[in-house]
Length: 557
Image (cartoon, rainbow, N blue to C red; front, side):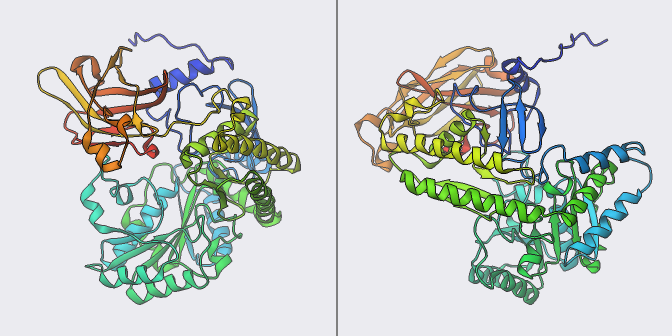
């Protein structure tokens, strides 16, 4: 008998309890890939944590606050949330069952639509995520060429063939990384050199045909030519470019055909659905490379995909998201210039990105976090990426432009140090500390003690206090230690002399579910300016940072 008492349902006012429960029972609950969450303590009530319901381009969070959403479900909600045609298709298919023992008519219909729409497509296959399809493309390219090496340009998924390159992550087959080589975008000379000199030849060249930088004249055609010349298959990662550049994706917009093209995100308008398409001679390799999963033929998502294609074919979806993005970009460019900020709005009109430069003694990531919070405090959600969808209307655009202007004003005040930031609607809108450091040692000594040491700087001076929170809530302060090596290497002043820290922690108290888990806390001016979870499992060679990797924190052995 299960002796665990059931938890009562959460109400809309239980957002703090939901956050606590998320951290307690969800292994990935605190790590939302779509949103660059603020990483500083005390901001939880500004930036929303849970969406309760959504329609069009707006959602309501667990506290009942309404937001205009420019994240658009990480790009999935191209038509907007709860689009009636998609909803109706899902309901209609539900009566036949979501997953049957045989193929369904809707799978064949959707494949036919894709073949007719996408220039390179002669056949299609379905999966659940972009990572699934990119993995299938790489496997098929290796099978076709008999080669192992892959050249990649951007982020192409979490599966082992690609994630193996991240050498500080345990559990990955890092030996596979020797078959991966990165190449820079818009640089044909470097790509040609890699294709010509990579020992054993190259099986596949994988790239996003456009990300935040448009392709130079002739670049994609040049990539196509080089792949053909060197016998490598060309794989387009079109998870973002499809429906946003053209109905047939980047290959239609630029007139360059890949050997495989992979789609996801917007294909199901939020339902889990991805597709790989290509010429028949390559697509026929997919059964041999084991593109198989129980829910590959799940019909609700396929029905949603068919509805999405119908709407995109018959309505000006592509034109609308491009127009909305173009108008927003124009407004933001004017605001940035007027406020005197070092910032750019990059990317295609249908997928924008806000990129700050370091300025006013503040790091770019801190300025972006400040902008995100100020927008959220006024009811506009963005992650720094802006994905217009078909439901963004005139009212949403007008209000968002006003909110961005107010948020940029707060950022400008922080950069100029005028103090005006204190009058923002966010209680934490202040110039943020620049925190950087390294955990040099994190290991048990075999005698019941867990030793942790390293160095930490706050605005180029020693932190006021370094402390560790154990799983039971106990706080243990670290001893400050001199670190002349850091001071000399970074050319720091005397205020950084004791930037080192060392702590001896009770090993047993730090154990949680077979791993040593701690939270490193950095204090300055009496406040916690950084919280960073650390984890080390027996047998791991390296500790894992589960916190703000983009702050420049590193972990040694």
